[in-house]
Length: 369
Image 1 (cartoon, rainbow, N blue to C red):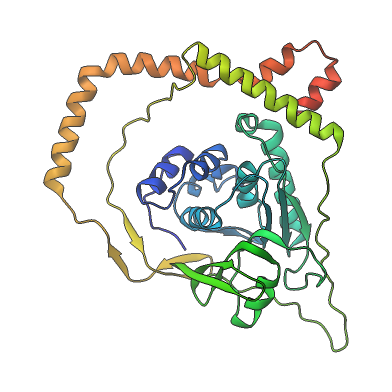
Image 2 (cartoon, rainbow, N blue to C red):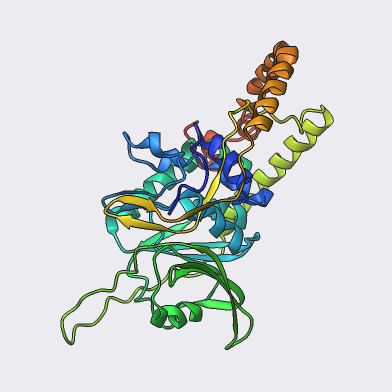
């Protein structure tokens, strides 16, 4: 599935397009998408395709289209402290974004069929924690990935507040998925070519809402010989944070808060870089998509916006005049902001503390930048 919004030049461009097309509608989802560069989850040599609104598959590694992920993130209605289960967790891209919202007192588990993909997801998670400056701007619930078939989860497993399944679910597996959900919880999964949001309202009652027409590859069912026992998947335990980890969380929270107050006092906290002006593109929502090999082929498409070439020409002329009038001032302003963006204030605060280097390294999550 994909192709619903225009291709971007970088991650911020892609998010701008998703917002304009109303796939991203809330600030917390936008912040999570901007914090994690989608291109970092692509193999070398394929990154040029990262900012197109298309799915990508290479061997067992697969990423859904950005418009799908944004609809899923919005439909899950994530809040700090919730428990999340990702069935078919893949590269860990979605689980990592979820972790930025549910925070350190949430639960973030993923089950993936392929061992090589789980290893890939763990490497990408480690790269994000150690190398991305975005990491220090959030309190994070680190995902835990494990190998297994999500149709073989142990019957005595605990339930979750939020669940996403990233593969097509057959109708006879719908109740199996629902049982994993807590009362009041939300399950999002593709079923019968519809991305569906299911809310558990009681012990035996659910409410369903179709979100988007999609086409997903079906869940893989293990083939086994007669009498062979299935390999049961035991989900990770709901571990309680240790005192040492709690100290790290609260020290970082306090320093981040102090840095924010200091920035407010200097009048720099709300300084936001202005986006560069982009060529306006007409966007169309695609109703449904089909996999053909590794290619995504859009079916019937209906335009949501009428074409207004005269209005676009006027807007372009007005924008050009405005840019010419204030170009130098804007260039200076953006230059100042770029310098501000390069400073990781939380890291600087930790490094300035009168503490042993080993403790500073622990507070920084042993970050390499």
